[in-house]
Image 1 (tube, each protein chain N blue to C red):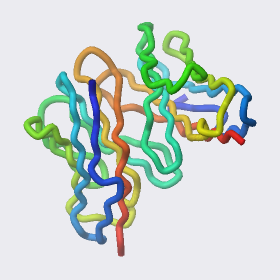
Image 2 (cartoon, rainbow over the protein chains, first blue to last red):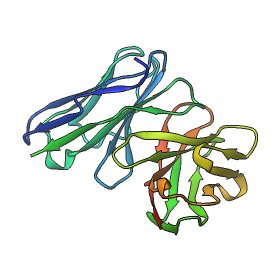
Image 3 (cartoon, rainbow over the protein chains, first blue to last red):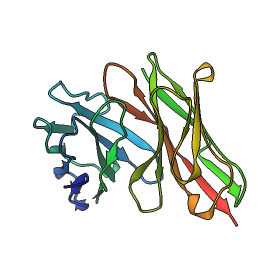
Length: 113
Length: 114
């Protein structure tokens, strides 16, 4: 596709359940990022993948959060045993090179009840 | 490590007035700097960026920003605010060498009064 897509667009889950969020980046974009945006707040860096290098996981808030990416394609962000504080919009972005802009997906709005 | 500070979580201006949104960064290597805008209920989109070369960069919708290395700043300006400029603005920094990690500021919400 022409842009970054994310699925699902909305997810409501019960506390304690696991969720998996998906990001389809733009073809050929080597770097992929996940961010969390809580209501009324800025972007919180979670993790980024750069080509086949080891991902930078320094932003993951706890070991309940994990992410995978195969090559330069789809990425999934998994949150285990969800908590209410995990409620947020999860944004995926990609870029084709270091000096270039990030292209953002529409986000997944996660609500933990 | 990189960091970004946006002074003022909320800025309010009158329509037609100057817009000034402040951004200071820290980076141990030459930075690449960006401003993104998020309109209500929309995704983030790039306003402008600085990588190398001319330190005054122009973006969309009449916005511009100037990279001042001595002040470690990248403030965003627009001479005359329009109602449609009301949005959230994010400053971001990426390392100029050695990796892609990008850090965003906390954002500044711009209000434009009629």
